[in-house]
Length: 97
Image (cartoon, rainbow, N blue to C red; front, top):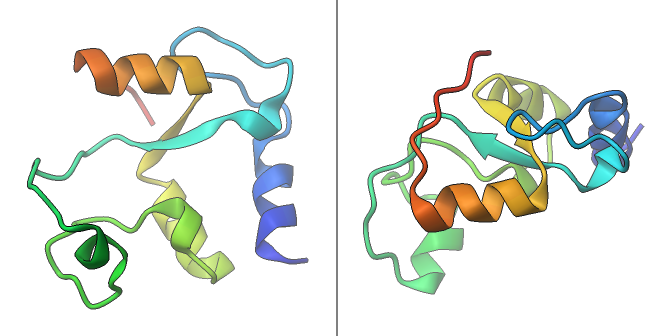
């Protein structure tokens, strides 16, 4: 099973942690609960694997299922709308794992 199939299977029967959206679970985003400190990154340094300034790895960049499982423990699932609203307005909703 490749990593894309594993992510899709993981999202089955899950819903958005904020609004409860569950019609198409494959569109849900992984949202890290503990956010990194806001710093201005140059685009190149954001994607550099050796960049030690990030306390977490963006889920889309992970290529190993074991590493993905470890990183997902730090995340909740949000629908695209709630994810955008959360980051745009800086909502301080607390999530439980």
